[in-house]
Length: 335
Image 1 (spheres, rainbow, N blue to C red):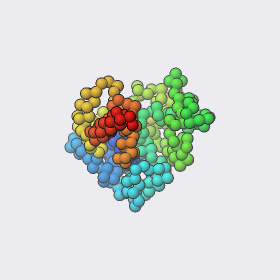
Image 2: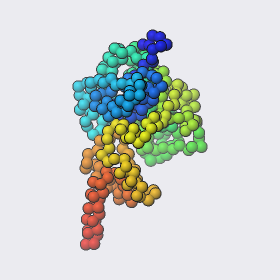
Image 3: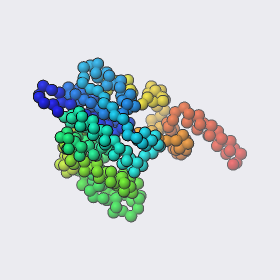
Protein backbone atom coordinates (compact mmCIF):
# COMPACT_ATOMS: atom_id res chain seq x y z
CA UNK A 1 0.00 0.00 0.00
CA UNK A 2 1.13 3.57 -0.55
CA UNK A 3 2.68 4.77 2.70
CA UNK A 4 3.14 8.49 2.01
CA UNK A 5 1.56 11.25 -0.02
CA UNK A 6 4.67 11.31 -2.24
CA UNK A 7 4.05 7.77 -3.50
CA UNK A 8 1.74 7.15 -6.42
CA UNK A 9 -1.59 5.48 -5.92
CA UNK A 10 -1.46 2.05 -7.55
CA UNK A 11 -4.61 0.76 -9.20
CA UNK A 12 -5.04 -2.76 -10.55
CA UNK A 13 -7.47 -3.26 -13.43
CA UNK A 14 -8.96 -6.72 -13.95
CA UNK A 15 -10.90 -7.00 -17.24
CA UNK A 16 -13.17 -9.94 -18.06
CA UNK A 17 -10.79 -11.99 -20.19
CA UNK A 18 -13.50 -13.93 -22.04
CA UNK A 19 -15.02 -11.00 -23.94
CA UNK A 20 -13.32 -8.37 -26.10
CA UNK A 21 -16.30 -6.07 -25.50
CA UNK A 22 -15.39 -6.02 -21.81
CA UNK A 23 -11.62 -5.87 -22.21
CA UNK A 24 -11.37 -2.97 -24.67
CA UNK A 25 -13.30 -0.36 -22.61
CA UNK A 26 -11.61 -1.33 -19.34
CA UNK A 27 -8.14 -1.06 -20.82
CA UNK A 28 -9.10 2.31 -22.31
CA UNK A 29 -10.17 3.34 -18.78
CA UNK A 30 -6.91 2.05 -17.30
CA UNK A 31 -4.93 4.10 -19.81
CA UNK A 32 -7.09 7.14 -19.00
CA UNK A 33 -6.30 6.83 -15.28
CA UNK A 34 -2.59 6.42 -16.04
CA UNK A 35 -2.68 9.68 -18.01
CA UNK A 36 -3.67 11.43 -14.75
CA UNK A 37 -0.59 10.17 -12.92
CA UNK A 38 -1.92 6.96 -11.37
CA UNK A 39 0.34 3.89 -11.34
CA UNK A 40 -1.71 1.37 -13.32
CA UNK A 41 -1.28 -2.40 -13.60
CA UNK A 42 -3.55 -4.41 -15.92
CA UNK A 43 -4.07 -8.07 -14.96
CA UNK A 44 -4.60 -10.35 -17.94
CA UNK A 45 -3.29 -13.40 -19.79
CA UNK A 46 -0.27 -13.35 -22.10
CA UNK A 47 -2.45 -13.80 -25.20
CA UNK A 48 -4.69 -10.88 -24.28
CA UNK A 49 -1.70 -8.69 -23.44
CA UNK A 50 -0.57 -8.86 -27.05
CA UNK A 51 -3.91 -7.46 -28.25
CA UNK A 52 -3.30 -4.19 -26.39
CA UNK A 53 0.48 -3.93 -26.22
CA UNK A 54 0.82 -1.15 -28.83
CA UNK A 55 -1.37 1.34 -26.97
CA UNK A 56 0.27 0.68 -23.61
CA UNK A 57 3.75 0.93 -25.14
CA UNK A 58 2.75 4.29 -26.60
CA UNK A 59 1.61 5.48 -23.16
CA UNK A 60 4.87 4.34 -21.57
CA UNK A 61 6.84 6.25 -24.20
CA UNK A 62 4.99 9.37 -22.96
CA UNK A 63 6.19 8.74 -19.40
CA UNK A 64 3.02 7.18 -18.03
CA UNK A 65 3.32 4.53 -15.33
CA UNK A 66 1.32 1.66 -16.83
CA UNK A 67 2.10 -1.99 -17.42
CA UNK A 68 0.65 -5.49 -17.64
CA UNK A 69 0.92 -8.29 -15.11
CA UNK A 70 0.05 -11.66 -16.59
CA UNK A 71 -1.29 -14.80 -14.97
CA UNK A 72 -1.57 -18.35 -16.24
CA UNK A 73 -4.95 -19.88 -16.92
CA UNK A 74 -5.73 -22.78 -14.59
CA UNK A 75 -6.01 -26.25 -16.11
CA UNK A 76 -9.16 -26.67 -18.17
CA UNK A 77 -9.78 -22.97 -18.80
CA UNK A 78 -8.21 -23.09 -22.27
CA UNK A 79 -10.81 -25.69 -23.28
CA UNK A 80 -13.65 -23.50 -22.03
CA UNK A 81 -12.40 -20.58 -24.09
CA UNK A 82 -12.16 -22.65 -27.28
CA UNK A 83 -15.78 -23.82 -27.51
CA UNK A 84 -18.41 -21.94 -29.52
CA UNK A 85 -20.65 -20.87 -26.64
CA UNK A 86 -20.02 -21.00 -22.88
CA UNK A 87 -23.14 -21.90 -20.92
CA UNK A 88 -23.88 -20.71 -17.39
CA UNK A 89 -22.52 -23.85 -15.71
CA UNK A 90 -19.24 -23.57 -17.60
CA UNK A 91 -19.02 -19.81 -17.06
CA UNK A 92 -19.49 -20.22 -13.30
CA UNK A 93 -16.77 -22.87 -13.28
CA UNK A 94 -14.47 -20.60 -15.27
CA UNK A 95 -15.06 -17.66 -12.88
CA UNK A 96 -14.18 -19.78 -9.85
CA UNK A 97 -11.08 -21.29 -11.49
CA UNK A 98 -9.61 -17.80 -11.97
CA UNK A 99 -9.99 -16.94 -8.30
CA UNK A 100 -6.83 -18.59 -6.95
CA UNK A 101 -4.24 -17.13 -9.37
CA UNK A 102 -5.68 -13.62 -9.14
CA UNK A 103 -6.00 -13.70 -5.34
CA UNK A 104 -2.35 -14.75 -5.13
CA UNK A 105 -1.32 -11.68 -7.17
CA UNK A 106 -3.39 -9.43 -4.89
CA UNK A 107 -1.79 -10.94 -1.78
CA UNK A 108 1.69 -10.47 -3.18
CA UNK A 109 1.31 -6.97 -4.61
CA UNK A 110 -1.30 -5.31 -2.36
CA UNK A 111 -2.42 -2.47 -4.66
CA UNK A 112 -4.28 0.54 -3.28
CA UNK A 113 -7.39 -0.30 -5.30
CA UNK A 114 -8.77 -3.02 -7.57
CA UNK A 115 -11.03 -2.09 -10.49
CA UNK A 116 -12.80 -5.33 -11.37
CA UNK A 117 -15.18 -6.35 -14.11
CA UNK A 118 -18.64 -7.29 -12.83
CA UNK A 119 -18.05 -10.96 -13.75
CA UNK A 120 -15.56 -11.41 -10.90
CA UNK A 121 -17.99 -11.03 -7.97
CA UNK A 122 -15.64 -12.88 -5.60
CA UNK A 123 -13.18 -9.95 -5.85
CA UNK A 124 -15.44 -8.05 -3.43
CA UNK A 125 -14.83 -10.69 -0.76
CA UNK A 126 -11.13 -10.98 -1.64
CA UNK A 127 -10.65 -7.23 -1.50
CA UNK A 128 -12.41 -6.92 1.85
CA UNK A 129 -10.28 -9.70 3.33
CA UNK A 130 -7.03 -8.19 2.03
CA UNK A 131 -7.94 -4.58 2.77
CA UNK A 132 -8.04 -3.61 -0.92
CA UNK A 133 -11.04 -1.44 -1.97
CA UNK A 134 -12.87 -3.02 -4.90
CA UNK A 135 -14.53 -0.84 -7.57
CA UNK A 136 -16.76 -2.37 -10.24
CA UNK A 137 -16.35 -1.37 -13.88
CA UNK A 138 -19.45 -1.44 -16.12
CA UNK A 139 -18.81 -1.46 -19.86
CA UNK A 140 -22.42 -0.51 -20.63
CA UNK A 141 -24.21 2.72 -19.79
CA UNK A 142 -26.52 3.58 -16.91
CA UNK A 143 -29.80 2.87 -18.70
CA UNK A 144 -29.33 -0.90 -19.16
CA UNK A 145 -28.09 -1.24 -15.58
CA UNK A 146 -31.18 0.56 -14.29
CA UNK A 147 -33.46 -1.59 -16.46
CA UNK A 148 -31.87 -4.76 -15.11
CA UNK A 149 -32.31 -3.52 -11.55
CA UNK A 150 -35.97 -2.60 -12.13
CA UNK A 151 -36.60 -6.03 -13.64
CA UNK A 152 -34.84 -7.78 -10.76
CA UNK A 153 -36.67 -5.78 -8.07
CA UNK A 154 -40.21 -5.83 -9.45
CA UNK A 155 -40.18 -9.05 -11.58
CA UNK A 156 -42.76 -7.81 -14.12
CA UNK A 157 -41.61 -10.58 -16.48
CA UNK A 158 -43.33 -13.13 -14.20
CA UNK A 159 -46.64 -11.24 -14.23
CA UNK A 160 -47.49 -11.76 -17.92
CA UNK A 161 -48.92 -14.91 -19.45
CA UNK A 162 -46.76 -15.28 -22.57
CA UNK A 163 -43.26 -14.65 -23.87
CA UNK A 164 -44.55 -12.06 -26.35
CA UNK A 165 -46.76 -10.08 -23.96
CA UNK A 166 -45.36 -6.63 -23.21
CA UNK A 167 -44.76 -5.31 -19.72
CA UNK A 168 -43.57 -1.96 -18.40
CA UNK A 169 -40.56 -1.56 -16.11
CA UNK A 170 -41.80 0.11 -12.91
CA UNK A 171 -39.74 2.47 -10.82
CA UNK A 172 -37.55 3.98 -13.52
CA UNK A 173 -36.95 7.75 -13.24
CA UNK A 174 -38.84 8.95 -16.31
CA UNK A 175 -42.24 7.28 -16.89
CA UNK A 176 -42.66 9.26 -20.11
CA UNK A 177 -39.99 7.06 -21.69
CA UNK A 178 -42.57 4.25 -21.79
CA UNK A 179 -39.99 1.50 -21.46
CA UNK A 180 -41.59 -1.84 -22.35
CA UNK A 181 -40.15 -5.32 -22.76
CA UNK A 182 -41.24 -8.88 -23.41
CA UNK A 183 -39.77 -12.00 -21.86
CA UNK A 184 -38.02 -12.73 -25.14
CA UNK A 185 -36.31 -9.32 -24.97
CA UNK A 186 -35.25 -9.75 -21.35
CA UNK A 187 -31.92 -11.15 -20.19
CA UNK A 188 -32.22 -14.92 -19.91
CA UNK A 189 -30.96 -14.95 -16.30
CA UNK A 190 -34.02 -12.90 -15.34
CA UNK A 191 -36.47 -15.31 -16.96
CA UNK A 192 -35.43 -18.88 -17.80
CA UNK A 193 -31.85 -19.46 -16.61
CA UNK A 194 -31.64 -20.41 -12.91
CA UNK A 195 -27.85 -20.78 -13.10
CA UNK A 196 -27.62 -17.38 -14.75
CA UNK A 197 -29.86 -15.91 -12.04
CA UNK A 198 -27.47 -17.25 -9.41
CA UNK A 199 -24.50 -15.57 -11.13
CA UNK A 200 -26.45 -12.31 -11.53
CA UNK A 201 -27.46 -12.25 -7.87
CA UNK A 202 -23.82 -12.78 -6.89
CA UNK A 203 -22.83 -9.86 -9.14
CA UNK A 204 -25.43 -7.56 -7.56
CA UNK A 205 -24.49 -8.61 -4.03
CA UNK A 206 -20.79 -8.00 -4.74
CA UNK A 207 -21.56 -4.60 -6.25
CA UNK A 208 -23.41 -3.53 -3.12
CA UNK A 209 -20.41 -4.57 -1.02
CA UNK A 210 -17.93 -2.70 -3.23
CA UNK A 211 -16.51 0.79 -2.79
CA UNK A 212 -18.35 2.08 -5.86
CA UNK A 213 -18.99 1.72 -9.58
CA UNK A 214 -17.23 3.20 -12.62
CA UNK A 215 -19.48 3.43 -15.68
CA UNK A 216 -18.50 4.05 -19.27
CA UNK A 217 -20.94 6.93 -19.79
CA UNK A 218 -21.34 10.64 -18.95
CA UNK A 219 -23.84 12.56 -16.85
CA UNK A 220 -25.47 14.79 -19.48
CA UNK A 221 -26.37 11.76 -21.59
CA UNK A 222 -28.17 9.87 -18.80
CA UNK A 223 -28.75 12.36 -15.98
CA UNK A 224 -32.06 10.88 -14.63
CA UNK A 225 -30.57 7.39 -14.62
CA UNK A 226 -27.40 8.61 -12.90
CA UNK A 227 -29.55 9.96 -10.06
CA UNK A 228 -31.60 6.73 -9.95
CA UNK A 229 -28.40 4.67 -9.85
CA UNK A 230 -27.02 6.69 -6.94
CA UNK A 231 -30.16 7.39 -4.92
CA UNK A 232 -32.54 4.50 -5.59
CA UNK A 233 -30.01 1.75 -6.23
CA UNK A 234 -27.64 3.05 -3.55
CA UNK A 235 -24.37 2.88 -5.48
CA UNK A 236 -21.48 5.31 -5.34
CA UNK A 237 -20.87 6.33 -8.93
CA UNK A 238 -18.11 7.70 -11.14
CA UNK A 239 -18.86 8.46 -14.81
CA UNK A 240 -15.69 8.43 -16.94
CA UNK A 241 -16.89 7.73 -20.49
CA UNK A 242 -17.03 7.30 -23.26
CA UNK A 243 -13.50 6.03 -22.68
CA UNK A 244 -12.82 5.20 -26.34
CA UNK A 245 -12.33 8.96 -26.87
CA UNK A 246 -9.02 8.57 -25.06
CA UNK A 247 -7.76 7.23 -28.40
CA UNK A 248 -7.20 10.31 -30.52
CA UNK A 249 -7.06 8.91 -34.05
CA UNK A 250 -8.32 6.02 -36.18
CA UNK A 251 -5.07 4.06 -35.88
CA UNK A 252 -5.18 4.12 -32.08
CA UNK A 253 -8.80 2.96 -32.05
CA UNK A 254 -8.18 0.19 -34.60
CA UNK A 255 -5.16 -1.23 -32.76
CA UNK A 256 -7.22 -2.26 -29.73
CA UNK A 257 -8.10 -5.95 -29.66
CA UNK A 258 -7.86 -8.36 -32.57
CA UNK A 259 -7.19 -7.18 -36.10
CA UNK A 260 -10.17 -7.11 -38.44
CA UNK A 261 -10.08 -9.40 -41.46
CA UNK A 262 -11.08 -6.35 -43.55
CA UNK A 263 -9.49 -2.95 -42.94
CA UNK A 264 -11.66 -0.06 -41.76
CA UNK A 265 -11.13 2.04 -44.89
CA UNK A 266 -12.55 -0.74 -47.09
CA UNK A 267 -15.64 -1.04 -44.90
CA UNK A 268 -16.21 2.74 -44.83
CA UNK A 269 -15.82 3.01 -48.60
CA UNK A 270 -18.28 0.17 -49.08
CA UNK A 271 -20.79 1.83 -46.74
CA UNK A 272 -20.37 5.21 -48.46
CA UNK A 273 -21.31 3.59 -51.77
CA UNK A 274 -24.75 2.50 -50.45
CA UNK A 275 -27.99 4.43 -50.17
CA UNK A 276 -29.08 5.69 -46.70
CA UNK A 277 -30.97 3.09 -44.65
CA UNK A 278 -30.13 0.32 -47.11
CA UNK A 279 -27.63 -1.67 -45.00
CA UNK A 280 -28.38 -3.78 -41.95
CA UNK A 281 -25.59 -4.02 -39.36
CA UNK A 282 -25.70 -7.15 -37.22
CA UNK A 283 -23.63 -7.58 -34.04
CA UNK A 284 -23.52 -10.81 -32.06
CA UNK A 285 -21.33 -9.56 -29.23
CA UNK A 286 -17.78 -10.63 -28.54
CA UNK A 287 -18.56 -14.02 -26.95
CA UNK A 288 -20.31 -15.59 -29.92
CA UNK A 289 -18.11 -17.94 -31.90
CA UNK A 290 -20.05 -18.94 -34.99
CA UNK A 291 -19.36 -21.96 -37.20
CA UNK A 292 -19.18 -21.10 -40.95
CA UNK A 293 -22.33 -23.15 -41.62
CA UNK A 294 -24.28 -21.15 -39.03
CA UNK A 295 -22.88 -17.92 -40.40
CA UNK A 296 -24.09 -18.52 -43.96
CA UNK A 297 -27.53 -19.78 -42.92
CA UNK A 298 -28.10 -16.69 -40.78
CA UNK A 299 -26.79 -14.37 -43.50
CA UNK A 300 -29.11 -16.01 -46.02
CA UNK A 301 -32.10 -15.56 -43.72
CA UNK A 302 -31.30 -11.88 -43.17
CA UNK A 303 -30.71 -11.35 -46.87
CA UNK A 304 -34.13 -12.77 -47.71
CA UNK A 305 -35.92 -9.74 -46.23
CA UNK A 306 -33.26 -6.97 -46.31
CA UNK A 307 -31.94 -5.42 -49.54
CA UNK A 308 -28.26 -5.42 -48.51
CA UNK A 309 -26.57 -7.25 -45.69
CA UNK A 310 -22.94 -6.70 -44.72
CA UNK A 311 -22.23 -9.89 -42.83
CA UNK A 312 -18.96 -11.35 -43.96
CA UNK A 313 -17.94 -9.15 -46.87
CA UNK A 314 -16.79 -10.48 -50.21
CA UNK A 315 -17.11 -14.18 -49.40
CA UNK A 316 -20.78 -13.94 -48.55
CA UNK A 317 -21.45 -11.54 -51.43
CA UNK A 318 -20.13 -14.09 -53.93
CA UNK A 319 -22.04 -16.89 -52.23
CA UNK A 320 -25.27 -14.93 -52.34
CA UNK A 321 -24.88 -13.96 -56.00
CA UNK A 322 -24.36 -17.60 -56.92
CA UNK A 323 -27.46 -18.67 -55.01
CA UNK A 324 -29.51 -15.86 -56.53
CA UNK A 325 -28.59 -17.15 -60.00
CA UNK A 326 -29.72 -20.63 -58.96
CA UNK A 327 -33.07 -19.27 -57.71
CA UNK A 328 -33.64 -17.35 -60.95
CA UNK A 329 -32.86 -20.41 -63.05
CA UNK A 330 -35.20 -22.52 -60.95
CA UNK A 331 -37.98 -19.92 -61.23
CA UNK A 332 -37.61 -19.73 -65.02
CA UNK A 333 -38.08 -23.50 -65.25
CA UNK A 334 -41.16 -23.29 -63.00
CA UNK A 335 -39.55 -25.17 -60.14
